Length: 274
Ligand SMILES: Nc1ncnc2c1ncn2[C@@H]1O[C@H](COP(=O)(O)OP(=O)(O)O)[C@@H](O)[C@H]1O
Ligand SMILES: Cc1ncc(COP(=O)(O)O)c(N)n1
Image 1 (cartoon, rainbow, N blue to C red):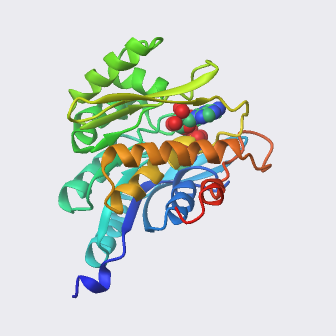
Image 2: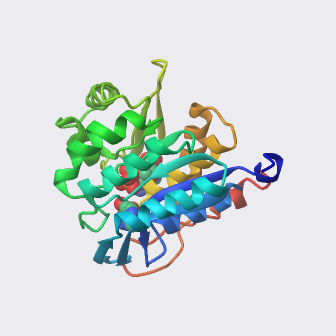
């Protein structure tokens, strides 16, 4: 097979679907499309979900998940991949085994635990498996504040706490850490980044006063994955992803009655040709 024939940047999201279209695989595909990469998906779980909450979900069989990975490995040239909702310990293990078997490029782990509406998307018993088996494979891990607290067994209240938590997360083997500050209540939303080489920086933006923040983490990690697939370095990918999600939150669209979805085309409209 000619490499030239398969050279367009391709990405993979390994996650759950959202029937409401705002989070999970749906947010991932919309974001990656906007960033001009060709996105593929391994579905781990299917949710019945809308902006009001998660009504039900079911994870797929190991056989079907393994087959999806094999289908992609047989044909595509995936340059970067991400994980989202992984449901439970058994499914984290299935995904880890496949990520060890195939090379899909740098891995961005969005350690999704609880949906904005409060529904658990990862069993408590899976958190130790994520720490032990998934994080050592991660090029970037992007926990929000509650996820960072669960992964580090720390209470995170201050900027110094965020720095200490990121250091602790690095000890799992994850190379680059981004702790997202969306769940705080400060006037500015501030994320903290600790890179593999020890460089650290803060990303700050005015907090948009809205509950329409369904899929913010998925959108951020997908934009990052797309930039990495196109060959950007980790810091540039993180900065672009932050600007992308900020524009998507700020340019609100009126969809649904609860935690509404983001405007995935806003960044492209504000930055034509970029
Ligand atoms: N209300 C908001 N205004 C501006 N940026 C936000 C807001 N909520 C979240 N963000 C940003 O969106 C990204 C995702 O953060 P967060 O919502 O904490 O993640 P998650 O979706 O995993 O809970 C972060 O960069 C965060 O700073
Ligand atoms: C399938 C799926 N994956 C991820 C999320 C998290 O998104 P959010 O925390 O914004 O609700 C979700 N709600 N559903």
